Image (cartoon, rainbow, N blue to C red):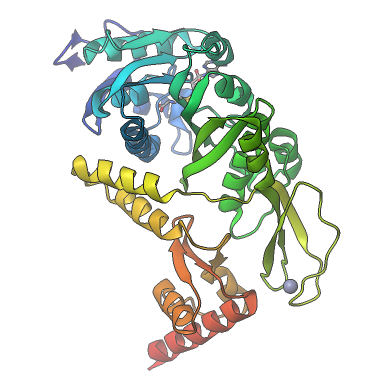
Length: 416
Ligand SMILES: C[S@@+](CC[C@H](N)C(=O)[O-])C[C@H]1O[C@@H](n2cnc3c(N)ncnc32)[C@H](O)[C@@H]1O
Ligand SMILES: [Zn+2]
């Protein structure tokens, strides 16, 4: 392969590569098609260096979030990506975000480091971006002293980010922003509940809103880890997409603030019979309770984060960053617009298809259900977490009645 910046790239690497463009950045990555022998094989984990094109949305959002964070700081900022793979994320940060003074990226895999370094040189970033080759926790710990710490750390691991939380909190400056990806959705969504309790210190539940619970469990774990260091957490943005969740949390030093974060922890109780759910504040495990709507046993998720999952100012700044870049990516724009509606919306959502399944009804358009709830005087908004999900202040009973009514109208229109 010939690269217009660097001539023949294959000479530099012992594996097949290709040039890809993401955002405004072009980098050399492993040629994934060379590693898929069967259609069901997952190419990113077969390649000698990690690169996953599906995570483009994750990186697009990270660029906007970093720009939003930089604009609030009013100065040039430092960034660390301790698990960088081929380096595409950090190179994008350096190329696409204004006000980034320096970036330290790192990977334990020497081949990844070689490719990342090549991408740094290819994009003429050597003065601002350094590439290291060590264990992520060792690297982070070397930056854990005052005046060495970073303004932004992006943890994008295989599976769970939990093994890196402690070192990340220690190497983030007061007011720094932390971004976490978790791809271990089976534990977080309740398929392997024991693994979730073990890793995240909270119990998951396989409900229709398990992806929101997953974010709350991840942030809950972060909150308790940060509190040990007298560091408080404020979630500025979060999202769920494809096979992962992501959370952006601001940190603030101070024992009293950290106490307040811990007070934001609690439990969500769910009734699998009638869809009722409720939140219980506080860390002490809730007593066994019966559903107030139908009398069935309530199931418990948590302890987890009960606080906000989005911040209004931060969402506007991300929107501004997208606008400034004339961003055309429909998925990102849709995510931003849905998230903005969710800022002040109630916790958890109902899935219209799940209710229809239970009553053997056709699925009405989501917008009909939202409008029906609104006309009955309830707050109702769609959620980015689930394309058939509605956040509403209405009870499970009212929600079901609204869905049944809309489904009936929908069926009648269809039958005509
Ligand atoms: C999911 S990939 C990173 C993808 C990258 N952030 C991106 O946006 O394309 C995870 C990376 O972590 C690296 N890794 C795994 N364990 C590590 C450790 N203990 N220290 C540093 N890097 C590690 C792997 O080699 C892999 O490249
Ligand atoms: Zn019930």
